[in-house]
Length: 231
Image 1: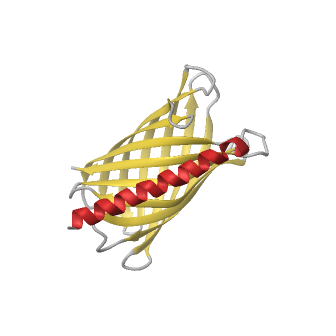
Image 2: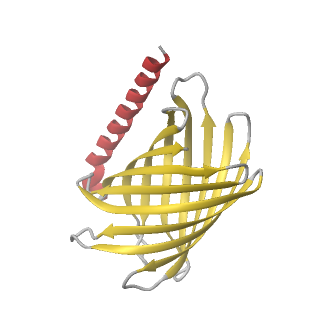
């Protein structure tokens, strides 16, 4: 009975997300946006009271999901220095394809991040993540950026496999030009418990960017899926 209920909830949310994306596609001609699909996999390889080691991978489909625009690999190490603060480091390898060709450019990104978080109630959690990173682009100049994310997560009970909802926003700052150049806003994220060791998150995101030195913003609309597994 619980499985049938959770399946109905899951199906309903997928249809809602699909409907929203269809509405976005209608607006693409006017706003010159794109609909993109992001798929992520995160494996929690080791965890104790203080340490956590994860391995992550992500693919990004561009042009309404017609071609592979980017893929990423990112192992991460985190250490809990306080019940409300985690520190970590990530190496990210990214290949991204040009919109007008078949060639991929390679990025090596090194992150240091601090993630404070507070339990506002039994079910509501507020979290931040502040990241300082060096982007090394093959064939181009390196530069430093920072990322700052703010999120709210609400734990659900008695909803079958649907165990949480959330929302977040994240801004990107580039230090060689001293400007904000990207924002990622997630108005809705849903999390489902697949098994005792795995969870699936579905989210909608607007990804806004502007070129270096530019004043106009361009926006892509992302439907994301993230699967996590814990050993």
